[in-house]
Length: 327
Image (cartoon, rainbow, N blue to C red; front, top):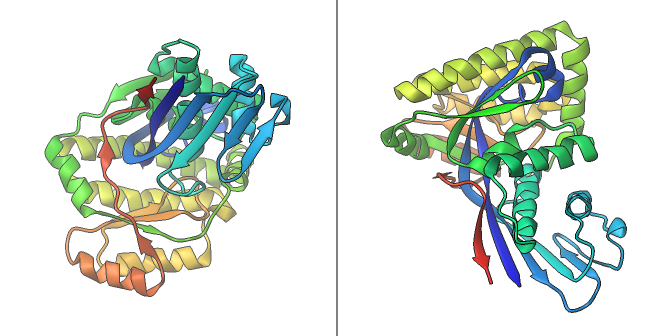
C-alpha cells in the first residue's frame, strides 16, 4: 500500500495571532487566511520490516514508536494506534520555519495520509481539529488554530473562533479578478533567517496576558482583520496593503523577538522603494518578507537582491489537503 497526501502552506491575510488560545479564550478570534500553491507531501508506505522508518531532514528507524524523535510523527502514530510496518517520508516545497504554517500543514497531511492508510475518510473539520489536538493539547505547542484549518479546508477563508475554541469556517467572497491582481502585485522575499516560532509565540502569549499594550495591539489586529475582509471582498487592494502595514506595526508591539533590526531595515527599504504595505510572514522573527507593489516592481526587486534576499514566487491554491496517490 502506498499513500501520498498533498497539503498546502498558507498566507495570513488579516487577524493573524488572534487564533492563539491566550487571546481567543477571552475575546474570540478572527482570521482571514488563504492556502498557497506551495505544498508539503507526505508519503506513507507499508514496510516489510516490523520497524518504522521516518525520513524528513534526517532518517529515523525505530522498533518502538515512543523512540521517534520527531514529535509530530510520534504523537500522530500514537493517536491513530499505528505501531509497525510503516515508512513515512515528508517532502516540502519550501523550508520549514519560514512563516508559512508548515507544522500545521505537516500535521494535517500526516493525519490525512495515515487515516487513508487505515481505510478512513475523515472530514476537513475532523482533520483540522485532530491536528490542533496533537499540536496544542498533546505537545503543548504555543500555536493557534489557523494553520491546521486552512491546511485542511484550503481556498480563501475567514475563521471565526469562539471563546471555547470552536471554529466556524466562512468563505471569503473574493473575486477571481482580485485574486489575479493579488498574485500579480504580491512579492515574497526569503530573508534566509530561520526562526523557531516557539520562542516568539511563547513571548507573545505571555505578554498578551500581562501587558496592557500588547493586549491592545491584539485588539487592533482583530479589528484590522475585519477591515481586511471588507477590503478584499470589495477589491480595494491598496486599502488591504495599507492594513497589512498597520497590522505589522501593531504586531511588532506584541513580542520583542517579533522582529530584528535587519528585518526592520529591509521592510523600511521595501516601503521606500514603492510598496504600499507588507509584513514578515507568520509568527515573526524570520522567514519570508511580503510586499504589495503596484508599480515599479523592478525597483524593489533590485533593492532586495542587493541585500542578498531571494525572491520566491507564490500563487494561491483553491484546495486543502488531498490524497493524490492511493495504491
